[in-house]
Image (cartoon, rainbow, N blue to C red; front, side, top):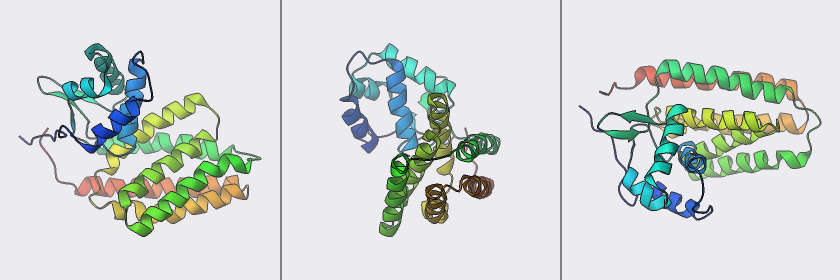
Length: 241
């Protein structure tokens, strides 16, 4: 039976969590803890198969075990964690059906948001400009993990143009699950490189107010991304549960 990886006591993502936890007080709820851990998934710090140590997180987050377990329960409900009897809590691996379902929802949300945009204030596009520039800079440095993070932020900020808290919440959960799927591709450059310029194209269309063209471009973009990941899923070696 294959062993699931467990992060070392001083793993980088735990240091990041320790820094982030200082931004909220001890009375913070399980929802805030869940948000913090969800963000670590979106950033790519917690790949599928990672075991989350309750002992480490209680110490780092300065929360009770009950609070942490409630956060685990929330993330399990979202599909971002799974509890394995007598083994602990793990970041799950998605299958091909999960991937196809996620992209179906992703196209529904993102393309509809873009199609409905009108009279965009250039200031509202500033986060997307920053994300595109960050992705291009990271690509020049050859930091493809950072390219992936910039890409995720681009899509989060794209959806945020709808000004809907419900859509933002749904998209955050969706993108977190998708980041788990992205780990299937062994070479992140192959995964992210084609979309650096395509994000720039989408942004340019939004700047000029060509939202219908942008929505059509985005739909093709997402179909291509899905096809690339499905191919990677079919080629990946199978691992024992």
